[in-house]
Image 1 (cartoon, rainbow, N blue to C red):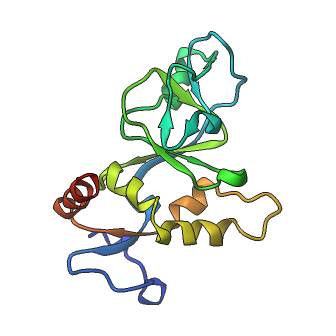
Image 2 (tube, rainbow, N blue to C red; image 1 turned 180 degrees about the vertical axis):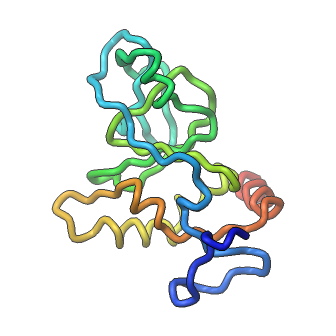
Length: 176
């Protein structure tokens, strides 16, 4: 385990199984990025995923609107399979969705895109549906008239990191 990924003992909410580590979510991510700002259109250069397009953990890509974006900018905002997008404001603050297929789409500015390097996206997404995640989201977004979370706050969340084979087993059992 990389030294900078460790969490001090007084920050750990509880003990983890042997081989697991408490890390910060940002320590296992490679790219936490805010979305593109534009207006949704009936036609355009590519699909434009917004918070409102995510309903009941699903996206109907046939109804997602479009936006205009030049090719250079598009590369910065393109969604890939296994990216996770998180709502950063309002009543849906913290709500997440894992991109389950490649689609020529960019994500809107009220979403934050997360990409991971040493953790399965599916394991991370299941974590983002657990009480430990929601308790932290509630804590970091409270005290504000309009609840919100930013990329920095997301990257600082405590995250229980098991070895890769255990991540795979956890995902397999959840999906069974």
